[in-house]
Length: 571
Ligand code: ARG
Image (cartoon, rainbow, N blue to C red):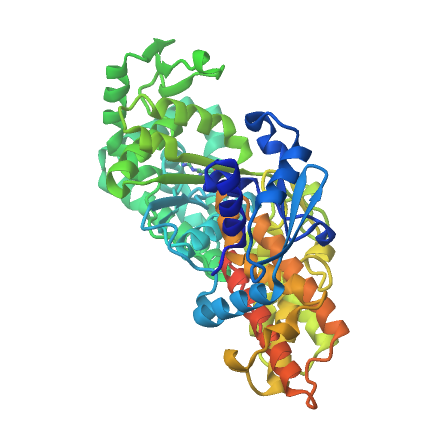
């Protein structure tokens, strides 16, 4: 597709003798279209050219040679050059590209087969899958989808928390009272109860604690009985987790969790010893990171000889570098673990890995979610159970459908897509690092900035197409009929789609795509309210508007799908 930014930077580079690609990054899209479609801020050049932005702007304007079929007008305003692009060209380019790529619109090969690991979800075996895990699952899946769509070789890893001394306790608890608990029915709840009970006993009886430690040791040594039990806990937990994953439509390429690295830790310790940075402190082995500006040392081996969460992460980095030769290894984990990842990434530099790998380690941190209303309000101290939350979303939507559109076909299926979609959208639409509030009325507001709103507008495009009874062929679409002020914003949105996907990855921010879809939906809604689409007495206009409608629906669907949201066919 023709790249207007490239065209502008190319022309400017000929005058100022600065690299075209660099200039391209300076170009902005003005908030107010009165200032053109693209703006070039000349103050970026003031220092190197030793002239005022104003003077530079005037000089460039004087000398620049542009083709009117591409750029219609250039203005100088303050230190800015404002470019007005040729709208006919814009419309043609956009719709031709969309027509050529259809449901693959916006996809690209920029990834060029680069290997990207996205690690997400990573709940802990035998513990509740909580609302924070929901968030990493949904965010991680979105990054996974977008990386794939842009041609990266993407590997999704669920780094299960399936290791640690607590399993020694759980085994002990099961040995003593296993038959009292119905693990098949409610595994996580029952295992939690079992765990609390054995933990209490440990506090009052040192010999029980000793037995627990012994179990864990046996587990590490591969003892059959202990391993069998641990496997059982894991299987039961995964079965529960997969209820959530299936509802969300989330998949993984690997479930190698912490236990997978249990036999890969000695090498980490060896390598760190070789680096000379592993020191003894109160019987433990640590790496001091004071000189890296991190005040807390990274504990590699505890005084009792057991390894730590951090050591397992280091072993995972070694393994992943060798197995996947990753260009990036992204961890979608709550900001509560910022320190952990700072430490691990710093210590990873001591493992003797190629710099490519340590540079590729990326922590995408996200904020906490608080549920503010309804039965599951966290203020009341209940832990939010994600399956219940998702089911509640679906049943709330069902109630809305019963009230507003009781004759809808596929009620059940649509309610699922809308309810789950609403929850997913809510997890992705605000700046990731910020804490957020989950409020049912906001999340399910069909007219708000929500998943259901995007779905609602999508369904509207579908019903327009259904009424029209056809999708025009691109050769019948007269682009000059799509240049009015209500239409151009839509065309521009569509034109920008691939750039939006790129900036999601560049800025590690899913909200860019989430908000974009709202804007596109709103722009279409404005257009729809102002224009008749099915104007049978003017086939030309009708063809253009029907095609536009199809294009909007297509982009909404692709974008939503990348976020993990399915589109209902009715609403
Ligand atoms: N299991 C951990 C938790 O639930 C998250 C794991 C994050 N990933 C990692 N590589 N440390 O808190």
